[in-house]
Structure formats: structure tokens, C-alpha cells
Amino acid sequence: MTAVIADLREVVAELQAIVGAAYVIHRPEDLIVFEYDGSVDKAMPQMVALPASTEEASRVVEVVGRHGLPIVARGAGTGLSGGAVAEEGGVVLALTRMKRIIEIDPEDQVAVVEPGVVNVDVSAAAAEYGLYYAPDPSSQSACTIGGNVAENSGGPHCLAYGVTTNHVLGMEVVLADGSVHWLGGRTRETPGYDLRGIVIGSEGSLAIVTKVVLRLLRQPESVRTLLAVYREIDDASAAVSGIIAAGIVPAAIEMMDRLCIQAVEPAVNAGYPMGAGAVLLVEVDGLREAVEEESAEVERICRSRGPMEIRTAADAGERARLWAGRKGVLGALGRLAPNYYLVDGTIPRTKLPEALARIGDISDEYRLPIANLLHAGDGNLHPSVLFDERDPDELDRAMAAGGEILKLCVDSGGVLSGEHGIGLEKREYMPLMFDDDDLNAMARLGPAFGSEGMLNPGKIFPTGADRTHVSHSRAAAKAGAGAYI
Image (cartoon, rainbow, N blue to C red; front, side):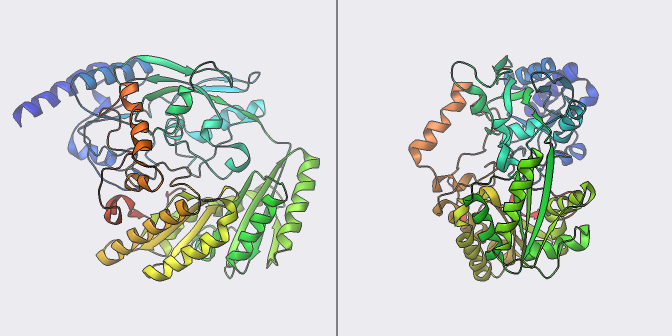
């Protein structure tokens, strides 16, 4: 034990020489805030280093690797799959000091940023040029670009514009040996293997991102936001299918069920009718003439499903209120239960009615309410199983219900995660989608990048644990203000 303590003290001293004594955290009472992310899984790192530059990050990685410790890269800690949790201890590399927007190029429509830049700040910086950054996780006022890259994050407006990988042109990365490399560049196409695409969504297990080149878009000429209110969730689901079947791809189609409305409306006063079974929030943007034509067709389709009410936002203020309701749902679930188990699976959107009906059956079978919030346009489900973790039986039932929902997604032709990643939470479910050959092929990427066992170990790949009793603590997220999805 004494040798281990001496070794750790030596690592602390070396890291302090690189980033400064104030930016190496190693006292247990200070490490507590780094032991969990948005999933509330808990594991204490042995220390945290906060580099301020690529050079410092590279030197930290080299030192930590030389001492044989694992490294977990971390952004704002808003992730929802345990991806930033240091399950095996070691060093957390917190990149929040690397928060410079290095360049906004209005001619090439790109931004060059460091990983600690907050998502919404990119659009704020680009706004003076009439540009914005499209991927918009609901945590965009807090989450960082580096974390978005790690999880290949999505968001409500990714239906039309795509997720993070569609908007990252290139990146600077530090490999496990401390060497610095560029993958991709400032253009959409580069010759050779798409190593950029491999690193995006790899959850920090292959490389640590230190700069990112982002593709920016022109701000739309016109935006129209429509709220459609239904008595039954099946009618809202049918409206979603009808919109897509008509060949219309809105910027966003979001759905909230009765429980979501009951939780968020008293908290946010967004204008969602309390007696509704479901609401759709549909947004169309683009050229003024196209927006008028498409929004009229969207309204016609929504009316064909017998809504209680259809309302179009009259101005920017009303639009903001409607979206505040959507983005405030998860935090408001604390009005209904102390805890939630959030499941992030994706299904073909044509299967929405059947899938939501089956989730209702699962709710009945496990005697727990399930609030359905979803990116309906691309079939990304976010059912939240509501429970009280102080009751062990409720906790077990919630975990089992979540597992049934994940199986439902895969059986429906979907996937385990639409935007939150696999991390710790879903790793034991990976065999539902992949056989041993698939998993072995993916696992070879770690040694190819030289990161095996060092960069974010224990994530993504199954350990063989019983999938019906996994991730109890990590899934037991506490609802309340500041919760994001």
C-alpha cells in the first residue's frame, strides 16, 4: 500500500509540474464532484488533471501512461450512460479549461474550437455572421463539444440536419502514447480511411480530442413552430408517420405523453393542455415560401388525426416557451417520482404506435409509471421508468423494465442507443445487437490506436454480468432541475 501511495504522490507531482498545482485535484473531498456524470453511477478517480492546452494534455497523457494508470476524458459531466465515470480509478482528464473558440470562418462556414467549449456558445459566436451550429442536445447550454464528439450526440433538430458526426469535419487528437495527430480537416472529404468517423462516438476509448473543426450552417430565413395536442398517444404517433410518409422532413418532431405534460406544465407553463394524452412539437425551417407550404401540409396532416387543438407559435417568445417545455421535461419528472431510469433506444419510426403500446404493457407488467419523451421524427425513444430507489423492489423492477424496453428496440429493428452512448449503462446489452465476431472486430480498434486498457477502460464492451441485474446505481438518476435529455 505504501508503494502505491508513493507512486500516486509521484504522479501528482509530475502533473502539477505540467498544469499547475491548482489544476491537479487529488484530495478525496475534492474528488467527489468527479465521481459521477448525468447517469449518477459513482466511482472515484484517484486524481483529476485539468490541462489548458493540447501540449499540456499530451504531456499529461504521456506521464499517466508511463505510470500505468487509466485515463478518462471528461467534459461537463452531462452524459447519460456513465461514459465519464472512472470505474477503474486512475486519472480523469477534465477538458473544461480548454474552452477557446479559436476561429469562426464565415467564408468556409467552419468553426475551430477546443473540446471544453459549451455547445450553445458556438452558435452564439457564429450568429454575427448569420451562421449557427446545428446539433442541439437539450443540455446544449451546459454540455461541451468534446463530450458531444465522444457520444455522437443528437438533439431535437437532428432529424433534418443529422447528429454530431455529420457536422464534424476534422479534429486534433492525443493518442495513448501522448502523440498529437490530425484526423480529417476543414473540408467534407479527405482521402484514406475515415479515422475521424471512427473516433466520433467511441466514447473517449480510442483518443482524446483537443480541437474540433465544426461545419456551420446558414441561419434559416423563416422558422415556424406548431403544437398539436391529442387525446391519445396513438393519434400523435399516427400524425408523425403521416408527416414523414408525405415526404416532409421537418427540422424537428418531438413528442411528449400525458405523464410528461403533467410533470412539466406546472413547472414551465409552456402552454401544454393538462388533459392531453400527448403533444407534438413540430418545427419547419428554411426559405419563407417553402416553410409556408410545408407547415400548411404538416397542419393538414395533424388535423386529419383529430387533434384537440393545433397552435402555431405567434412570435419568438411563444416559440421559446414551447421549447422550454420540451427541454424541461426530464428535470420536471421529480414532481412525479424521486428517480427515473432513462432508456435511450431507437426504433424505425413506422413502429412507433406498436412500440409505445408495448411500453404501456411493460409499465403495467412491472407496476411502474413510464413517461415517454421522444425525438419522434427519427424514432429515438426516451422512456423514463419512474421509481423510488429507496425501495429495493421498485429498483429491481425498474431495471428489469428498462431491459425489456431495450430488447423491444432491438427486436423492432432498432438500436440500443440513439445519442447517449453505451458507456457503462448498456454494455451488458450489446450482445442483443452484436455476436462475438462483431464485438471482437470492434475490440481490435483499441489496440490499433494503442489505447487498449488505458483510455476509458471498461466502457462499451460487455463484461458478462447478468443483464437483468446490471447498472442499478448508474441507472438510478435523480430527477430535478438541471437534468437534461
